[in-house]
Image (cartoon, rainbow, N blue to C red; front, side, top):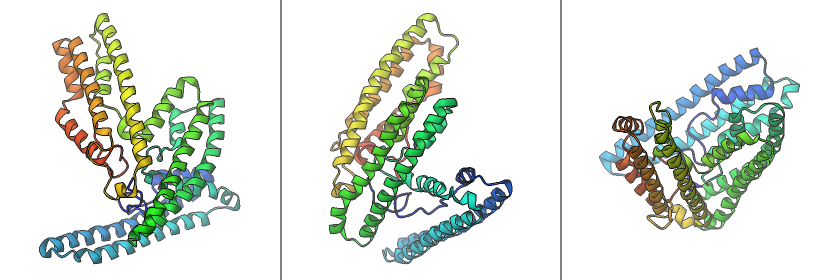
Length: 382
């Protein structure tokens, strides 16, 4: 919920290129660029990326020099010049982005120019949607639907829903981004009194982005084929709560045993039972985790945010992550009991032994305060 923090991909700008090769291909497709236009655009992109890299190198070198000076002098003012250079470079990076997008627009025919607003919306999604720090705020239904590989009538109906989604999402993204930029400036100015009253408005703006995803995900459920609905729903859950719904050791263990060719019919039957009970238990604890994380975010105060979230057991997630680890350990223990010694050795090789690392991760997660996944959280599998 560090909504007003700069750096690390947070609001206030990114220190890297805001357009990559894949995005440019998407924009070219939207605009219907021909081969010559695409080639010129690629050359422009390479120049843009090189210029941004030059600026990021300046920032990196300045910070390294400042740290070295601080280690020698213990004078905090050593970072002042580095901060100023970083600010100037960041402004230059933002200017380079604007120039690149402007040059790209100038290449277009009058017919292609009519599609430019669609590129602006796509670019806004690509560059600002991932910066949201509230659970469910970073969902991108365009990517999720694309991964479903729909065809025929369902594909057409889904695209119709996505067209409405793109317009609705763009409106709330613009409002959210504006609120966050204002909050960031208050934070830079150390105007914490103003920031206190602004905080709730900024959170409301985030909620509107999250709820837009949820509204249109429900609409998509009505057009996506039934066979692909579980895939879509799982993708939305993972995007909403990545630390809760990512793959874990029990998933890897079940996948490993299902691939064993020397299982008896009795073993397969027992493994199916273990998978059913594990899935049921995992669904229950994951649902509780997601609800707790969302409740924490909804009720978090500015003071909580300023100190990096609630600590220890205050947020209620540490115990739940412990329950989840118990479900995983039990599943693996039950699977090993079904297997022969040779099969169990294969299972151990496939899954690995992450018990110590998991325990450390759970303790850290409890101290951090739940699902603070984007950019700042070190990914760790169960």
